[in-house]
Length: 392
Image 1 (cartoon, one colour):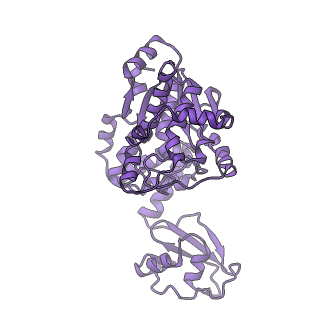
Image 2: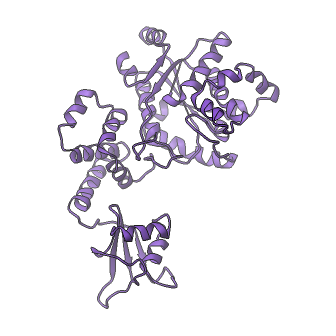
Image 3: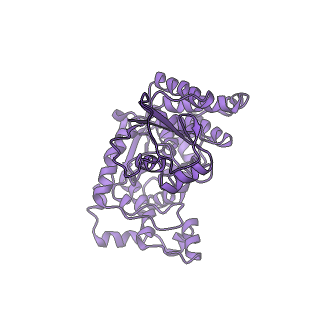
């Protein structure tokens, strides 16, 4: 694989000249990417970096997937303006179990070295930890943008969070990594690893950052914490539907970062109607995790339901008699499906005219649902995406 391909799409490359020299020499490099199992799901934000790691893997380099089961208990403060919630060891272990199955949907498991940083940090003594803290000063830590902002705003910064960049950097020392790949918000942490390697006379890792993928809200980076993400484990319907919810402006970034479309191909896509381009995007993203036939079916189903106003063939189904409600009102029935955040959300949708019962607009959230003698079911549509079938 050409060097230009391996380095393409990167936002920042530290140690570029040395890296190009190493790649050109044909030496097999250790390429590290670390993920903290803070939630059960990997997201398409991770996919940007996984794609780059896969390119190095396909080029014959040693790829190291580091599961940060120890650092996850601390919580990476990168890009944050507040403290991260503390996770228990059992929560981290449960999340970590799902990560490999998801990661190997992209990476070749037979060519991937998996490590967990609890292997070395669980054995570290308090004296070892104190010695590690000598490697950086408070002033250096406050050079981090997020720390600096929180300090100036008198927001708390725990000493444990101060330790996080050092801990991530120490991973690079243990693994003797030649390259570390991560999102652009990880640049400071990865540079710490480079400095720690240099401090002990080790060959320093090149640092390669990838752009942060904007989330479904079109504003903040895609993150499990912000709940604006598409997950590796999402259903085909959810991947397709979430991709279709993107703004026209945001979708081009997804073509570039997730599908590796070159600029020329993106310009060709821009000649299409935005809806057609977005359907092509959603189908391609779905195909990354499901068979092409499944992705094509989702596209056909989406077109049938949303473009032609038809009812989907499959939808969540609930029996009215089994709900055991004191009052079988539309409000109570919808709330019992757990498809809505609150009854207040349902009332707002009704007020906005966004709820239909058998294609007839509903104006009263307290209306009681009832079946005609020959009627077996009814379909409730809420907004553009939620369809619910209610049976007797």
